[in-house]
Image 1 (tube, rainbow, N blue to C red):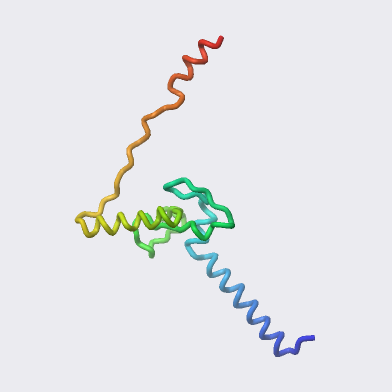
Image 2: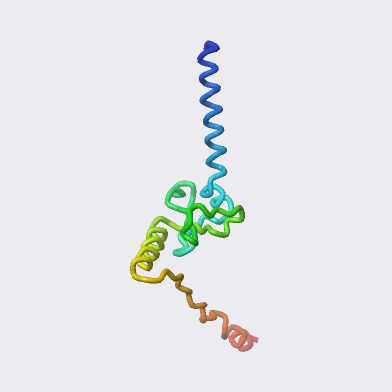
Length: 122
């Protein structure tokens, strides 16, 4: 049977572990992982508990202090895409203006001729 002293020490360790877990829960990474699917926003790679450590939270405006409750400044990126994003941002800073590149909207419609194909089957 543990003495009162060792029991108190164990209680303090458990209490500290619970406090630390609660503090991490409030952290933006944990909130983002609860809010968004575990998929890289750039390359589409999917993550599980086994490799979740490779999924990072990227701040869209590059301000790590801007952490709104709705997560609107975050996106989940794999390590590689996250490094690439920061490299592009750094290159843009040293090369002149910092601008976000707009991706062109997809123009291909895989179902464009589907109605005509289905008419011929009748």
